[in-house]
Image (tube, rainbow, N blue to C red; front, top):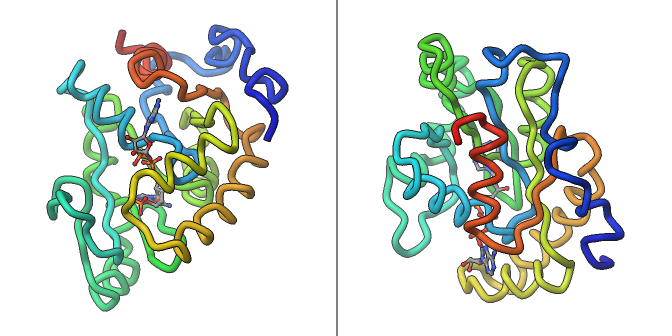
Amino acid sequence: MSPAVSRGAARPLASQGAHPALPVRHRRLTVLSGPSGVGKSTVVAHLRTVHPDVWLSVSATTRKPRPGERDGVQYFFVDDDEFDKLIANGDLLEWAAFAGHRYGTPRKPVLDKLAAGEPVLLEIDLQGARLVRKSMPEAHLVFLAPPSWDELVRRLTGRGTESAEVIEERLAAARVELDAESEFDATLVNTSVEDVARELLALMEIA
Ligand code: ADP
Ligand code: 5GP
């Protein structure tokens, strides 16, 4: 991938974030997507140190916890049968298969927060973002892009949490995700975690 500028990353934030057709009260649901390894979790974790009150949906997944991940914090770690039940009971707002595992957003907490007028942040993959777009067209979709393809590979590899085979699988998915950037309402390039967290808060109209 060529440098950020050639892929439109230099577009001014104000025009990317603007969504004039929607009144502010309907912009409470923000979906953050982007290729694996781009830094979504890092940005969200930083954002929540600055603004601990920002509510982030905790997804269910059939993937095994990475070192340091705790059940109910980063994810609800479930087995295949439990995930099947969540689907069958209609408990998921959306779900998708990604790199050999399933991931889904618990429906009720999201709807409860939105009903209470609170901002909601989902960190989900492209397929999930598309499903949310369909079921909740007022959602604001934000794409987190890497500064370059090589940097994405470096981050994904450098994280050291996946085997070479899984990294290849995630990079194949990343190519598809990067091609879908134009479907999103805004793009943020993750050069600096602090800057992106600040820009994301601005898009969420929190700061
Ligand atoms: P994702 O949640 O998108 O899969 P992570 O948040 O796990 O990605 O980040 C992948 C790796 O990239 C981690 O090792 C993280 O520390 C690193 N990283 C994240 N953002 C940046 C950044 N702006 N500059 C350099 N490294 C970063
Ligand atoms: P990871 O295994 O790296 O934590 O996540 C892999 C991918 O699954 C990431 O792109 C992440 O955003 C996505 N993901 C996490 N939770 C959900 C979810 O509830 N739904 C969907 N569709 N994707 C999710």
